[in-house]
Length: 370
Length: 186
Image (cartoon, rainbow over all chains, first blue to last red; front, side, top):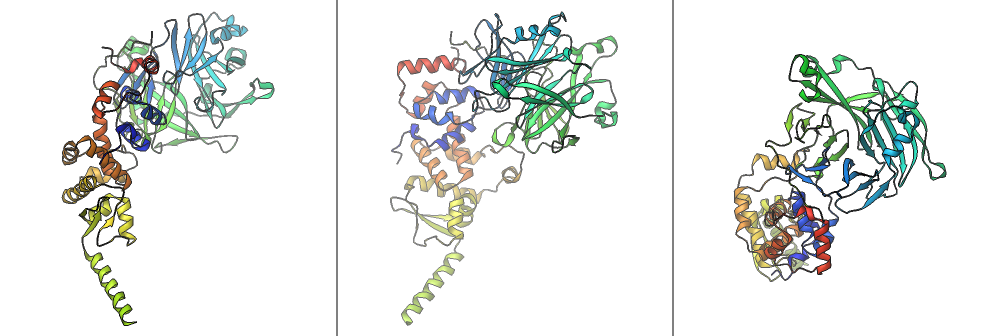
């Protein structure tokens, strides 16, 4: 029978085949076979990738670490979805999608940070950049980009960009009392920030004259963190916690990550001796102005990815190899050579942590197109 | 009148007989007839299940004009083999469980079943499975096709599937540049 060639494989079947290929590299190679496959596979989303703090990607289903070629004079400082946030040695910033090669030019964020008089006189330096967008950059390339910049003085600065220009900067040092934001996230086009004493803030935006500005920063929720809220396993020992904001199916989730030290005495002072022991998740009730946090015991089949440099949620059912109701986390503190140290998957229903990889990985070096 | 009545009765009897039969007859595009377990056909193919439930199964062979005899033989073979194999617990749970991955690995016999197929037969079978709404067979065949691609360069994949490289030299170089990291560095 088969009078047709494999290149005529109907698009819906090619997509099914691609779904059986967990490796990103495999999928990309299939796309390069012929015109029809390239065209039909384009509609298919990439497998879930976890951006690691050093700018590499971890392809979760097959546990492969992929180092994307970035221009020699650039460094990856973070990411949003599959877009890398690159900063050149001359300070030029951009978001680059390494798959499509699309680029969104950003202002020189380092310069923007130092231009703020409060930051300029602080004698400190920005260290972490977290870009967030109200909607996927692929579909809305003219989108606003908000950037959370954390510095080595544990202060935050929020920069609003209408690429390629910065339209507003809000430094924590300029506020009194100082409002430091640990994390920010967009939900339904609104920007939220997790502030001191576990308060949730909303950034009211003024979109007039094509220059979006923050018109007010309003606290919409207080959080009284009681020790008895903590998971039993965490309560017993000394711990520290990290918090993330993640948008998930139109809701805002606050994810608390608990780390414990495996050493005693002085060593407990050093973050490098800590490892993650558990998580808990709360959903912001956003129906009213004064929202309350509600603890959630499952994620409705979604998978969360949390990190200081990028956070996101995905429906697990659509991605082979990703588990629903799980939080994928990575080491986003104390940079080490071992990118995957203290990274893993926490199942919110069972409370179990599974390492992302059972064996040490060899990072595959990819030669860029140079 | 009487003749009509007789006809009606005969029709009735035929329908009852058909409902009682535990196989259905399918006819390929080239007119060959195949018998398949009704239970397995209804369980494995949403299209056949709909036809059986809707009474549009023809005792003399239900026409499947889009499917050639070789592909239909494989479909029927698969259904009958499936009817004889006890579905594993994992397979049953995968269809109802919300959180498990949507795809379950093919079982040993399913693997063997697709391994023995020629490339042309595999192509026809995956299309037939798609046409008949046979989710499990689609999974198994697509899995097989993906195995034939795994770890291969675009050149090797073209060779395996006998696909003509339809890119110009310039396009090819562009793709190579763009996706440099996905190619093996040897």
